[in-house]
Length: 222
Image (cartoon, rainbow, N blue to C red):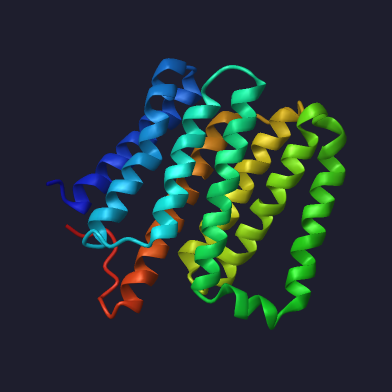
């Protein structure tokens, strides 16, 4: 049985290979390694919690893995199916963060909620007309994305909060590409921020779960 430390080391190595492959244009390597990013986090979370991981975290990661696979398939239908998979992931994360106390924090700060809502409106007003037939699917998805980032910051975990914001940044970069907005090294930035977002959310969530179970929140331990 692999140790959490070994799985985490494999995750770091796979992320490095994937980002480099994207940067130099080795598409077969980038495509082959992409599913292992979230796949290894699933295994790590399972092992790091003594096989008692938060169910919503595991469900979210599973749908993210499905979305990663779907996005590599050709055609608009596969892309839309990938959006749906990630939409389910966002819902899982939102529900999990609410259980961690994000809802109470946000209810006490309505101005923060309004600020996030205005950000969602501004992004869709700016990018919506440039997205063509993807405008409305992305509008719906982006609502869940922004809500997830807001809830992540409201959990009180710095790791989860930063992860949620990085996920927003990663998907915003994808949205800019879909709108034909040119950004240098956008592929590398997307994968780097995506991998960082998922690992920070996973590690932070596991640490919160362990602390609430009365365990010492050791993160990358053997």
